[in-house]
Length: 269
Ligand SMILES: C[S@@+](CC[C@H](N)C(=O)[O-])C[C@H]1O[C@@H](n2cnc3c(N)ncnc32)[C@H](O)[C@@H]1O
Image (tube, rainbow, N blue to C red; front, side):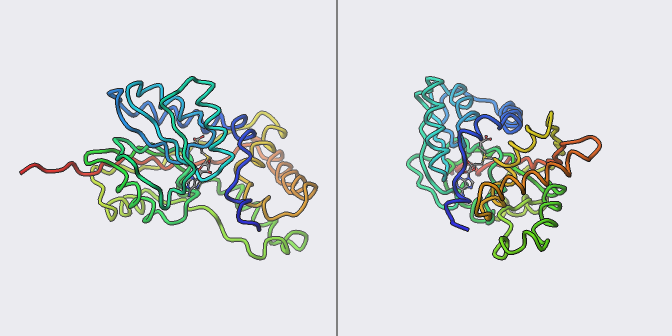
């Protein structure tokens, strides 16, 4: 598997199909009370749909959208331009180790952390990027996320027809529990920690919508292992048929992990 295939996204397709992520992002955003002048990092900004909303909430502040995908970063810059969000700046960077020009009042992140395997390193990096008293508000896939499609894909990957292409397969996600996440955040130095799981089953209107979405988001790492467009279409098609036979059909069993935590303020003596 070429490394860039798992790092890169089809940003145009993601921008079009990411209504579930945008909807979740807006719910998480509604949890934050803004003064309007904050410096905010959107960690894993994707194509910038949620970042533009963040930027509108800090008209006297700024949002730094970080993403390691160049395609996503370029799409996010385009989104900023369309929204006339002059205070949204997009930087290509890996969240496992990213530059901090100015400490942030808020690190916000949705639908991203589960794509990063080492959450201890991630939380340490975010803690470092926050100003004293700064807050982390995030949501990502949590324990049990997408269990059905991953199990079905796994069964196919072990079959005689597909197994040769998945010989070097390693699961590229970390779906952590609330308890594990709380312990990791504490180790990174955070206080006022809240972490909780939330089922978010998501239904698609038909096989086309299901196939387009899963090919762009959920099955992106699997499809990166397959050498031709025809094979990728066949893999997605076979899974789509399995979900068509469910009652109700075309439902993804998303489970979201919500996170809120604070970097301790500096104590004046
Ligand atoms: C599903 S998208 C979510 C985008 C956006 N936050 C949203 O809610 O629509 C996940 C994003 O995380 C980014 N990402 C994954 N791992 C990353 C890492 N280690 N460093 C920076 N970005 C990462 C991907 O490139 C992708 O743009």
